[in-house]
Amino acid sequence: MERDLKNKVVVITGGAQGIGHAIAIKFLTQSAKVIILDLNERKGNEVVKTLAAKFGDDRVAFIKCDVTKDLDEVSSKIFKDYKHIDVLVNNAGIANELDLRAILEVNTIAVIEWTMKFREHMRTDKGGKGGTIINMSSLYGYVCDAFLPFYKASKHAVLGFTKTIGHERNYSMTGVRVVAICPGYTKSQLTDNIKNKDVKIPEEDKEDYAEYVKTMLWQEVDVVGNATEEVFRVADSGSSWAVIGGQPIEKQHKTAHHPLLDIGRPYLSDSGDPHQIVSPPHGGPAYAASPGSWSPLQNFSAPTAISSTSYVPCPLPLEFRNSKGYDVQLILL
Image (cartoon, rainbow, N blue to C red; front, top):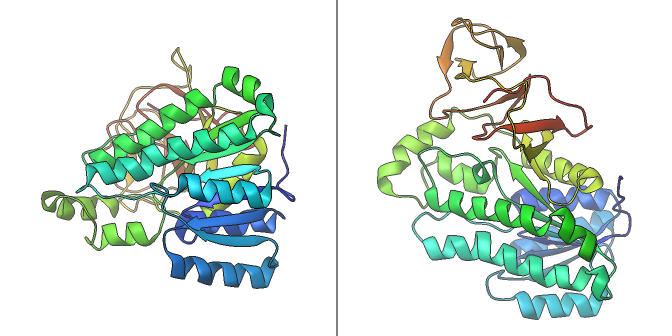
């Protein structure tokens, strides 16, 4: 069943910049009403002024908010002013490997607390009208490499929480759909800091991680904004969606090995720019990559080629379907 954003009231945490800002713009183009929450008051006011000029003063609002401290105060104001909230996007996040408690409070605890508060407001079995909660996990919510252990822990937790609270049993009881989005490497101020080595990670990791991220495939924030709108329209509760290279791909864990899965190590051309499906020189299964010289994709022991433009590393047998619902032909584990 496809859903429509027209006249839906949407709350977006961390909505003044980056992915949250891109989601706000996309939802506004679909005739939603958007409430942007962000800790950066100056940026929030600037963004709302710009968006209001384009979409109308009655379509967008800003509330300064620290998601770790202001839940009760801000949610009470929102529920009073807007009566019913249709969509919550838990997007606020940080990557501070030097402060475990801060990263868990923002990325995990706040997501859980905001989900439960708004879910209670939306529940059809308690007088609400139902709704949708979209929680921002990450590619790092289901894949591991040598870096950012605290960040990965926070995003793994979001994915597990979302798939559980969004389970079909819970959705049928409450009428509140909960889904997760797992963006791949996405250009933002945070990632610029990583590439410039101006990021809060241990000194011993900075040099290697800065080089490591240069090998990744990157996407613009509006790719994730567009994908989030598509996920809103079509996603089932409890599902999680990877957004890699501009294409949302539904990810469901399977209990048995998928017949298309094969064991092997994927290779990329040195350019790292995939254009077509070709076979690597070692004679193994086909991988999505450019012809030319081949080299292992560093530090990913089990990447998965999804299409000619998408790579989704995954550690477990998965079934991938693209956003239109058909099965992907190549899945490698």
